[in-house]
Structures are given as C-alpha cells and as structure tokens.
Image (cartoon, rainbow, N blue to C red; front, side, top):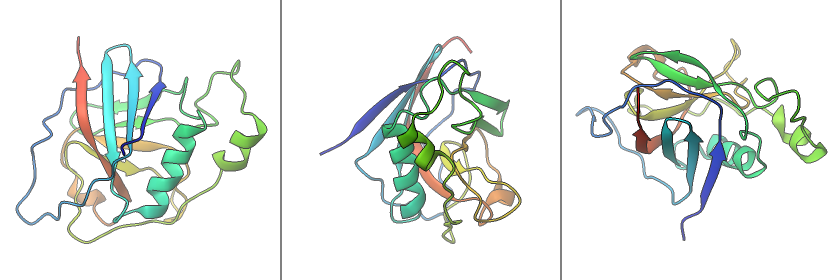
Length: 169
C-alpha cells in the first residue's frame, strides 16, 4: 500500500526537469511506496524515497512531513540548473506557525550521512542538505535541477522526484 502525504509550501521558482536521465555507470536504487507531494503555487512536486540507500534519512524526512513540519515552509534557494533547497523546518516557518511539543522533539534531530557508491546527483534526485559536519543533516533538503558529480558521496541522496507538474515558470 502506498502512503501519500500532501504538504503546502510557500512560493518556489524552479525549472521543469526531465526525470528520464540516468547515467550508464549509475546504480538506480529501489523506490519505496511512500510518496510526498509538495503543493506550491506553480503546481505539484511528488517525490519517493530510497530506503535501501538512506533508511534513516528516508524515515526522518517522512516523519517530519507526517508531523506537518514542512507545511508553510518554503524553498529558500533556487539555483537554475543546480538545486532547489527547502529551508529547515524550524527556521523556515512563519512566526505565526510555531512548533508544537511533538514537532520540537524531532525538528532538530540530525541523521548520519548515508551514501552509496554509484548513486549520483543529477536532475530529479532529492538529497539531504547539511552543515560542514558530515552527520549534521536535520531537515533541509534539495532537489537537483542539474548534474552535480562533486556532491556524490558528500551529501546523502534519499529519494527522487516522481512527478514534477509545475507551470508558469
């Protein structure tokens, strides 16, 4: 059974991406049944998880979504041909939407860097953002809008975009 979670975010300006781009040397991970749908003014972005590549990160992000932590959040960084990145779930929220106790308990938890040789950063990949410490990923993540091999093995890929139905960009 598939589980879908729909969330609403603030505005986002990203480019339509092709989801059929796979390099010959790339490993294509198994996709989970869980799906997350970001509903933005320009349309919907649906992504799925790679639990065999990044089990802790996949579970963590899904739990954050399930608890409503991305609702009202936004993509604070959009670099054409590179990434669209969400704000962290605490700092990216509107002041009028404070975290409840259950949300606070998980909002600042971090996950270890989970990488797998051959799983690459290219269009449509969803990857965990982090600080300078390798195990500092908490809630900010990015969607690849182009290829970035310099990120491979440095940032944890945990999913891929399954549907990118965005208009007016």
